[in-house]
Amino acid sequence: MEPVRRETLLDRVRRGAVSVLDVRPVEEYRAGHLPGAISVPLKELERRIAEIPKHRPVVAYCRGPYCVLAIRAVELLRQHGYRATRLEDGIPDWRGHGLPVETGETSTEVRRARRLP
Image 1 (cartoon, rainbow, N blue to C red):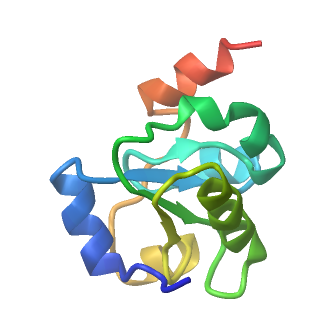
Image 2 (image 1 turned 60 degrees about the horizontal axis):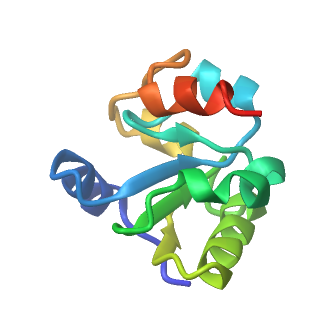
């Protein structure tokens, strides 16, 4: 399960070539997340997996390189036929490198997903 480096992920996000999943609890997502990331907490992933586009690769991330949430998310996604990997680090590392972070529920996909039963 080779992780994706932050520089590679930034390039893929800019090109719209990847879906980014934040698998931390919603409260942590609201406090700060990668631009364009979709909030799907690990405990909800199996129930909400159909919301995730299957036509492009998925990169999951959580709190950092030793956080098992992203590893478990990638395993589950792969079991369902997704091309999935994880980010090599998490939000603290991302911020520490001066990379952009959004707060609140800024993704339209998150707002749409919250309306689902």
